[in-house]
Length: 193
Image 1 (cartoon, rainbow, N blue to C red):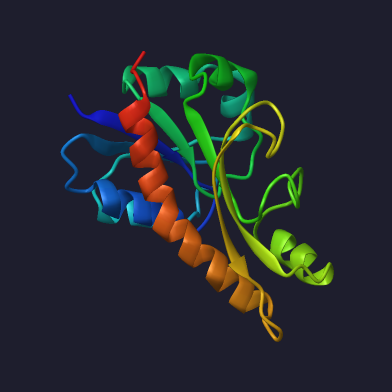
Image 2: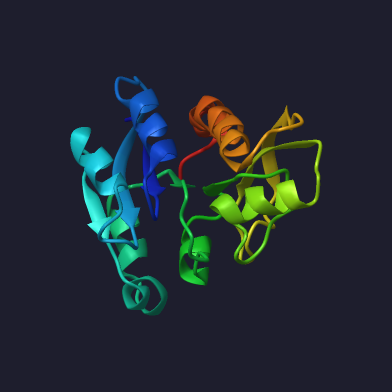
């Protein structure tokens, strides 16, 4: 029985794509579903390209009902991967999947984390503060933005003259390299429910 991955994303889904590619012909794990809170998210097209089912939900369904939890349980999901998902995960989902929800953040937490700190907002803050390095953090998800236990960090140097696009590029290279591998290593360690 393959381990089953659910990916949550709110936008383009480049990390989701790398994870789908990584597990496409994998013997032990597969992406079972991609979920989004954004009906226009490009990640839906990416999932379609891999013939992976999708589910679009709204704020009411996510926060006021158990339908997302029930869907994930019915699919026997082993791990939930947040890949550019911008909403805080509700308590019912955290309780249903304890230590089975992970997120990727485009900075070296605990720096530059918290509400509103995502995407370009993070990179702009890193630049504005004249940091000499930045990186990525993969962490477990809890009830607070970006405060769960850190699983993996990778860093890169910020060179003189690096602009927003260059920092974003360097960070994305690390994300695309490490995120699928970290998901795989966690699945290997994980006992299913």
